Amino acid sequence: MKHALPALLGLALVTLTAGAQTAKPSATKTEAKTTAIETATPLTEPLKDGAETRITCIYKGTGKSAALSGAYHYRLWVPEGYSADPKKTWKTIFIADPNGKAKLGAMGDWIKKHGYIAVMLEESKNGPYEPNIVNFLTAHADVLKRMRVADGKKVATGFSGGARACSLFVTLVPGFGGLIFQGAGCSDMNPLDRSYIVKDIKVKALAGTFGKKDMNYDNAARLKKAFGSRITIFEFEGGHQWAPREVIEQALNEVDGKLPK
Image (cartoon, rainbow, N blue to C red; front, side, top):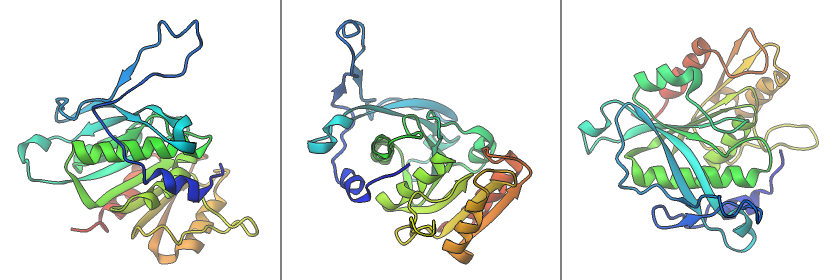
């Protein structure tokens, strides 16, 4: 996947509004009569502790980004005990899947045990980067308004193309403290020697998980070369896949332990 970074960074400057706009997905003339108009999930929508809720965000682009206008979604996990203390802020993890519609997966038990808010991106998937960026930016802007997110304690993780996308996400907005690569390296690389360009990745807590038979196994060594002692790589017996529970929990513990106290 390729991206034009200056253009994508421009998307981060757009004001994103939740709760007041609607978007109608593109449709043919024959489909138009039955296509529903989506509305942003109100910020007043009741949320239940220990449960997932699907959130709809509306993006209205201008100029070159007008074609990206429409509804974007994420699934929000609200940790147990969230409503008990209205002043407490919470660690938050953003998850991206190469096939879209990200889930907690093998990370679920750990995320629930450690009291993280989870943001699972739906439209972010392999393909053009622009929709992925808009999905992330709309979800990020929304969850900051909707939830009490602890600054500096945000983590991003994804598998394969989702990992590459996350390496870009953490450069677009402030407040990320952790990044976990699963089955792939960075989105930005030098075309001459395929070394990763990581100058914009400022997060201090980094980890990677790779199966020893993964087609991207060499990405682990390239990440280590790029980040040095900043990153810890966890390997497992397997191929190109999300890390199994026991491995991703090690990576999550590594990153969580380095977040601000």
